[in-house]
Image (tube, rainbow, N blue to C red):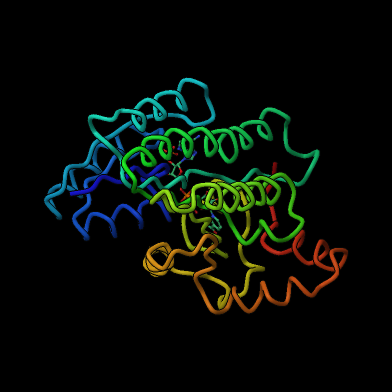
Length: 257
Ligand SMILES: NC(=O)c1ccc[n+]([C@@H]2O[C@H](COP(=O)([O-])OP(=O)(O)OC[C@H]3O[C@@H](n4cnc5c(N)ncnc54)[C@H](OP(=O)(O)O)[C@@H]3O)[C@@H](O)[C@H]2O)c1
């Protein structure tokens, strides 16, 4: 039996990873901040699928939280075979409307935590000659979209580079780039979603099934939906100025501050 560690496991895309991997018989280490919600999730997944589900309450915007998850990933007596760096969030507002503390918290969760957790996991995986890491980025990585898009662009670049450096080691890394997914994300960020057309929305369970299939195929970047694959093809051909205008409007209607 293998073990997967998922950050941000209690909602949205992370919860879909937890359900899918539990269905496939993987033991889980569930990471998020809300301890009560983690415990409920662990009990439910254990009871429904007969797997072991361990909980690790950690705030990845803090040194202490990152260090706790690093320590778990470095525990070679209980190895982790698959790491899903999924925890993330959006900030409410455009550049300069967002406080520096919130911008830095995003860099800590989306960049520093991803770097440190990937490194802790892959060091141990490399010595065993097998393992996988999925770093959840976004299609926002490919368009100008504030610190959020910039941090996700880092995730894609970092993952592609690390995958290349670890080629042949038995360790696979993949950046997952979803489009709009119905989760708690937009509500938590105070974003209105009525200007996002219905056809752009993805289902978290289908997204995760496609992502895991892409990981098994050895992809290093996954845009697991034909609609977004086509859109990203158009994005590549569109001048950055036009792209910035469109992307800064779509899905960025914020409620009152
Ligand atoms: N939804 C979309 O449209 C979309 C599109 C592209 C990419 N993504 C990316 O997908 C990932 C998951 O997003 P989602 O849509 O599933 O969001 P979500 O439904 O809001 O879930 C976020 C999860 O992350 C955890 N989390 C948030 N901040 C954390 C922190 N500081 N430390 C530890 N855990 C934290 C939350 O639990 P606690 O609050 O208990 O900590 C929760 O389990 C993110 O990286 C996001 O950027 C989302």
